[in-house]
Image 1 (cartoon, helix red, strand yellow):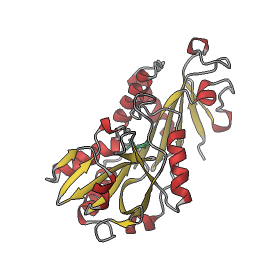
Image 2: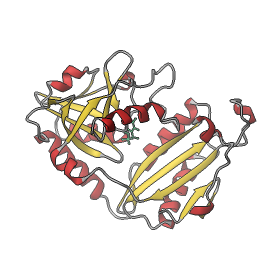
Image 3: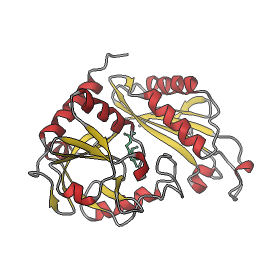
Image 4: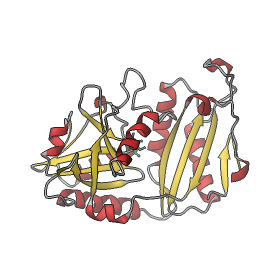
Length: 289
Ligand code: PMP
């Protein structure tokens, strides 16, 4: 449990970190957030996450009240205050307290919250043997309604799909976009490998542009693989040699079946395992701060 939480400009004991019941983050999911990993005392790709937070905020016309560098410093300060060496940071900006109406002009001011805590991971067994996926009937938000590139506090779209995954006995679920193409999973981006070529949906397939996704694309290209960002359909996954997911919490994890169809030979494939190892080296191999 976190000891102290950064809220609205200062670090306070965790049990005193509270927001108003009139906060539009609570009333309407009106706000943005980031989830970030801490490895060996270093906040991994912090600047990239903070950039994405500002972009999400910009898209919903929310003005983050402090500049980028100050936010980076506040995250590091919160991690240190909680003695987090390997853990997870949740960065949240809400619209602030308002009235029981939607008008953002009646809200007080945006509230920045930083929580540094430990992280719950998928069971080790899934990293060794890979995960099974099902396709959710809930499609990903239409980009013209709430663009999935915005990491907003309204995660109901993903939660509804996650429930379907849970009902099917899966820890993740695949989400399609409004065109029936593969978008992403409820909290992870998806990749396939076919005949040595690595493919992942582009941002205009209606996905969150994952920071882990981009990091793994770089790692794969550095390792000499060709990576293409192209639209995929479920058939591409069914007939793939390998499939894996990327995400801040999940890191890199193999997928061994989708909708009851075995992918490849039903075990984590060689390129996936190599990328898992490379990602692990990148994160664990960072010098201590
Ligand atoms: N897609 C969705 C919908 C997510 O919530 C996440 C995790 N935040 C991701 C993809 C993976 O993004 P990242 O690698 O930046 O954690």
